[in-house]
Length: 436
Image (cartoon, rainbow, N blue to C red; front, top):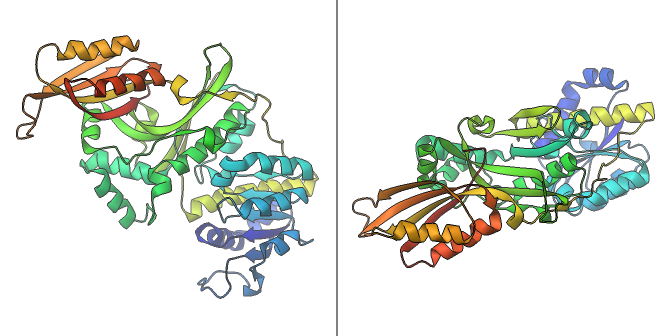
C-alpha cells in the first residue's frame, strides 16, 4: 500500500515516525506493507531533525504526487479549505482512498468530499478531525448505526477546557488563564479559533452530521466563545454546585409545526458537578452520547497533540488499506434523514442571569414582570448586597436561573431587562445545561 502524505508538520511528522516504528505490526494487521510514495511540503530544505524518511521523498508538487499511478491512499494533514479541497476531490474522484484530519474543510464543504468519494468509489475516513485519539466518529457511524441518537454533548476543544479548568481551580480571570495556556503550549499565538469557538463549531457540525444522518455545515452551528466568561461567573457557578465548560450540543427536536429537526450549538454553559463532563479537566476532551437503545455513553481522552492525532490517522489508514486489499469499500455517507437545522431562537435551554439592580422595594417584582411577559418561568432567585467599596451606592446583586424556555424568549427577556430603570446593568448571561 503506497501512501501520499500531504503535510509534514506536528501531526505529519508523528505519522512518519509511527509508520517507521510500527511498520512490521502495521503490515501484519493490513496484510501488506505500508510504504510512503511521497510527502508534499511547502518548501524543501527545512530541517526536519532525525525524521526517519528518505529526503528524496519530499516534494512541493502535491497534485503531481496525488495523480501518481503508484499512490493508493492520500493522507491529508495540511488543514484549511483550499488548496486541500482541490487535492482531496482530485484524489477521491480518481478512486484513491483519503484519510484526513481537516475539520475545517469537512465542516465547510464535507458534502463535496462525500460526493467525490461516491463518484470515484473511494473511502473517505476522518476520525482524527474530532477529539484526536478518542475513538468517536467510527462508533457513531458504525457501532451505533442500528440505534437512534437523540443528543450529543461534548467538550471538544482542549485549549478552552484548559483555560476554564484553570479559572475554576484558581479563581483566575480569562486573560490570566489564557496566558498560562500559552506558556504551557496549550494555546496558539493567535488563539482566536479556539477561544471564540470556531474550532469546536466545526467539530460540532461533523458530529451532528454523523449522529443525525443529515448534512450539517459550520454555518448551521450557533457559536459563542469563552472570552466573556469571568472569575465572577465561575464563583457563581460554584455557589450553585456547578462548573462552566465550552460545550458543543447537537440534539433532535421539533419545530413549531411538529416536524423533526436538529439543533447544533457551541457556547459556554454551567453544568452540575454531578454531570460526567464536569470532571473533564486540563486539555482533555470528552463526548457524552445519549441514544435510545444504548443509553448514555461517554468517550474520553486526549483530544489534540501530534501523537494522539497521528494515532487516529493511522487507525484510518489501516482501515482503508485493508478495504483496498479486499476490494471492498466502507459504508458511504449516510445523510438520508436530511433534517432541517433549527435556528438558535427555537432551541430549548435555560439562562443564568446576573443583574446589578437598585436596592429598593418593588425591584424584584418589576424584574419578575419582565420574565412573565416573555412567558419565561423563574426557577431560583438569589439576592445579595453590593460589595463594600464598590462605589455603586444602594445597589444589589440579583442572580436568576430560569426554567427551560426557547432561547429567543430568554434573549428577549434579557434585552428588556437592560432597559429597566431599576437595572443598572446585566453583568452576566450564561446558559445552563444538564439538569441543574
